Image (cartoon, rainbow, N blue to C red):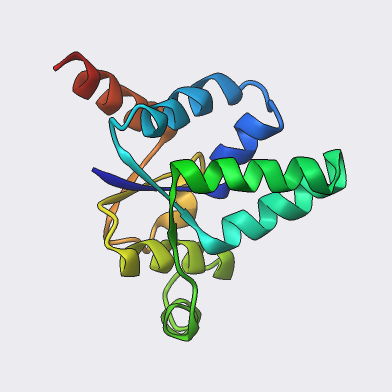
Amino acid sequence: MKVLYDTNIVLDVLLKREPFADVAIELISAVENKIIQGYLCATTLTTIDYLITKANGKNSAKKTIIHLLQLFEVAAVNKATIDIAVYSDFSDFEDAVLYYSGACAGVDAFVTRNIKDFKAAKLKIYSTAELLEIIQKIAKS
């Protein structure tokens, strides 16, 4: 299963944001353990670089990005993605870009803590708890 991870899930792990970090760690571990194939939107990486640089410095940010690139595929953002997003029914442009980058990359689903932000989605949107339950079932089989 190919799943695009919302930026907030990666940030939950990197910034140890409670009460979300534990579930987010398990979701990223599923990518590390090749239970699912994880994708990040290209803009997620730029956002993470900015925030980690601000919090921990450029070297830390670079190491983080390199590690994420070893784990995740990257869903591109280009003019086509932006065109689709800007004319979509999404109320938030950033969410639209994230969604359509994944859709254009051929993901099966998305995982986010903010399902309500993806009402216009046609692909499956999982909450973190829903995806964790699926991962646990896959791991057991």
